[in-house]
Length: 269
Image (cartoon, rainbow, N blue to C red; front, side, top):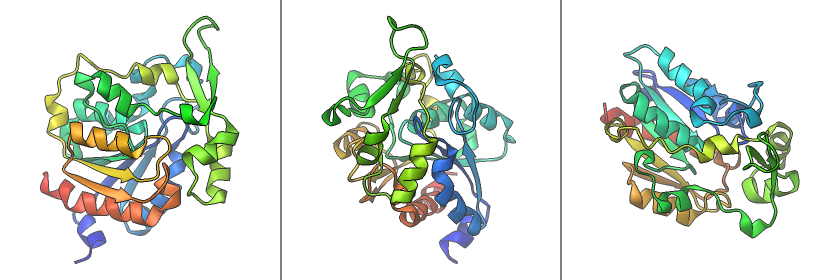
C-alpha cells in the first residue's frame, strides 16, 4: 500500500496556515497536489490576509489575527483530527491552536516556521523566532495605525526586496504572483503573541514535525536549528530551498507532509 492510499484510510484533513503578509493563496500548488491525491485540505486566510477584508492596522491582538483559524477549529466535530501546517509566522498560529484544541490535532507541522513554547517565552526564543532582515538594509514599509508617535501596527517587505529575501530560489512567475497578492501584516498583533497565561500541557500532547529550509533568508538555518534544539520535535525533514518551499520545491514538500502525516501523525493517535 502506497503512502497516498495509507493517508486516505482514514482520510487525513490538512489545514494550511500562511505566514505574515501572505495568504492562503501561497499554498495553491500544495492544495492541488493534495486534492489530486484524494486528500482533504483547507487553506485559511487569517485576519487581514488573502481575501479577508480587514485592515492590518486595525488588528492589535494575536487572538484577533488568529480568529479565523480558531473559529475553524471550534467548528470541527469533536471526533475529527486535522494535520496543522504552519509556514513562517504561521507557526505561532499553530502553537496557539495546539494549546486550545489539542484533542483535535493529529499532528503539527512547522515549515520554516517559528516554533517556540509560547507559554514560556524567553529572550532566546524571541531572538531565534523573529526574522532579522537588517543585513538587507531598510526593507520594510511600516504602517502606524495608532499614530506616528506610536509603535508600528503593520509591516510589509518592499517589493524590490521580496524576491531576494523570500523567493530567491522560486520560479519567477510565483514571485510575480506573490508581489501582487502580498499585503501588510499586523505587526503589533504578532509581536504580542506571547500567551504567557496559557497552560502548556495541551501543546506537549501534540506530536510535532519541523521542515527545515537550508537556504532561508527569513528564518535562517541557525535560527531553525536553535528552535529545534530548544523544543525538539518528533522528526526533522530538510529541504534545500529558500523560505518558500511551496513555490520552490512543492513536490518534495508535499512528500514530506504526507510522510509525516502517515507515520508520526498516525503513530501519535
